[in-house]
Image: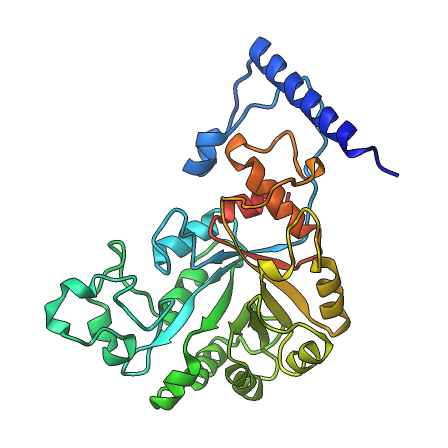
Length: 339
């Protein structure tokens, strides 16, 4: 039996007061702070070496840089992907759309008015969708001062890293592109085959909201790990999960499908139901904010930087449900929280 919640909260408060007093009376220097990210430096705290602190709990969760590290850099840019890697992400997540001449490029949607400077480029007229422009034309656009990267450029970025980093790809508007005669599934399968990434042991996941697109990919590359994206309104009962398990190895779910990390609601049960069908549960998307109240004090740790404390508790709450991976706009916080 655990202690009553009131006593746990009081214990945490007492420990926090002790830290403040010790830090005020015996400040110490910290070595290595310059190696932290700029965001971490702004909130880093000193832990007095004279006070024993239990190690942070560790969770075997993959951290996925959602569109890179959009809390710090423009989304879907090589600079953003690199920062996510530098912050410790295990995977980066490019969304893919197709150009008119069939190249796969990283954008969240085909509409280029949302994330590029195409509105200020009169030479394109009303052609504002990726499928209306060639790759050469798209390469003249800018997003936060950066070029739009191709899938090949993203793969090359991964090959330059000093540690293994995986790809978590998502095909956007796949049905629309098939209707336009630009089937992204075939092009992606060819690109992954050229890299030798066709098996479940390879560092690749491919996700999507469209079941038909994922089934096509499953037929093209039966060993590829596929993830079905689910919204809070999507059914997750037994028959629905049985059908998804025929082509996918992952349920990639909106966080509201699991419920608040303080109570769990359907979270642990959903994770267990997926596991019985041979699937993992991946969660999207967490950032640096925390919309949840009354998170258990047991999810905190004295080492947590002040600016990350609530977010770290949120991440740990979801990690404790048994999810296998998390998409994060702030990979540094996600990595910190997993210990």
